[in-house]
Image (cartoon, rainbow, N blue to C red):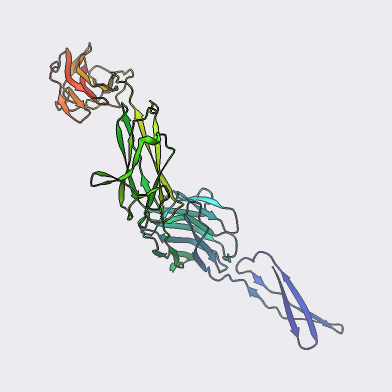
Length: 465
């Protein structure tokens, strides 16, 4: 930096002095020289004047502003840090309560160190100093954003590069469109040994835009013969922030055209066709308030000879009328059932109880175990109907192994007690046909039937001699 000082002495002598310096000198550095004057062969030296460099105070400010949002419509909230004093500020602590107003998007923020232009990634987790810059620690806990900057260099102006932290936010989902959000951060720092507190950022204003969003879920159904008709029931819920109407249309339709009966809604348990109110080839829902849902129904009849055993699907698209660029979709699918299949799975598992607490010491397994005399072996038999037919007249039996004896454990009807069975509907019962405790023999149980997908589990334990 260059300074030119003009000094005028009396009305006769005029001279110029140019001072050149780069980085500021250390604090308390003396600055001073004596001036010399010559005239008519004589010389005069002035007195010495001295100035000591005093940095004075740190003067830190934090200003909030909006940056450029991302492609998902989230806003970049920026905190710009400046220090108007020459003294470095220490341990700047900034807190900004975003609860009930904003949600942080993602798990990281952006930090640009003082005097730099390159971005560094900082995490929002409560994990200490940031790995890419140990001078800062950013975290977001219980809706409060907290930033610690250990050292804020003196004379860092807002126009200087760096000193910038940013996080992407979006308004909380239940805040109505048009709402005005304002919030102010609070901060403190050390100016030498003095702690400067109760400082506030500027107020940042945000007007909540219209946000269109919906939940739309599809359904898969099975059929066995042509001629069956189906109604696919899809819940469409408005999770945006304002009342909205959705246009419903079909895309990627794999059904023959004559099999589509129509798109309707559930009205008091009845199928009611939706109308094409806009006369554009789509149908429209009723107006849905935020949080309100409607059951969209697609009625299909499998009468066409074109229906095969291949999966057939169609996608229903729901487009917002408030924000026409927003749409979501649900997929409906029909799977034709194959011929009925009788099939079952039957697996035996085991686990050891070496400490006698009537609980296995790990997990049930099919693998080899090593037990000592006095240890208990817990057995688990699992029978499952993995076919499409109902299985009937089921008999299960298991023989107590040699060198072991039946144990009733703690005597309860639990896995660590008497032999029991469990059904897939939650039913638990005692196995009646079993050896007495301390004896060998065979355990037997029978069931009338088991439906497709259901299972039976048998639990019992023995003690190694």
